Image 1 (cartoon, rainbow, N blue to C red):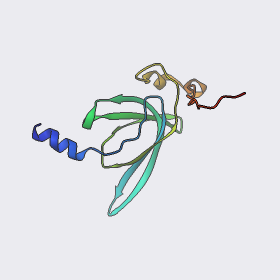
Image 2 (cartoon, rainbow, N blue to C red):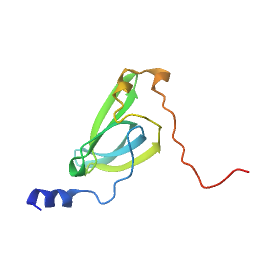
Image 3 (cartoon, rainbow, N blue to C red):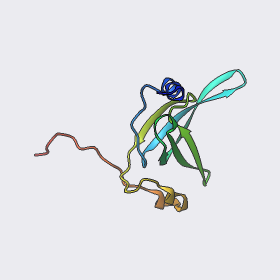
Image 4 (spheres, rainbow, N blue to C red):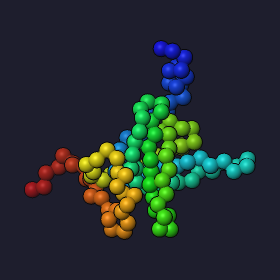
Length: 121
């Protein structure tokens, strides 16, 4: 293993939440203003995941005042405090770039429900 791999391995987060494309997530981002540090939530739909290992990134899209805003986050960045999955959606594609052209009710996706072991009788 070369030195770059060892440095990357040290910088990787130990636990990363499981989320996939199509999930509604809340990303807690550390913002530094002067000498103060605060956490700001960026919530939206994960439309893409790229890379792997230390270089893995994901793109989150949300609508703010009628305008689409996309932000790319590195998964292992120290500026990301937390990633929470709000809702999982059922999708059939690896990238949801077509959501950029959708507005209003066209942006809805079918929700994915987890099956439980219970039987209804």
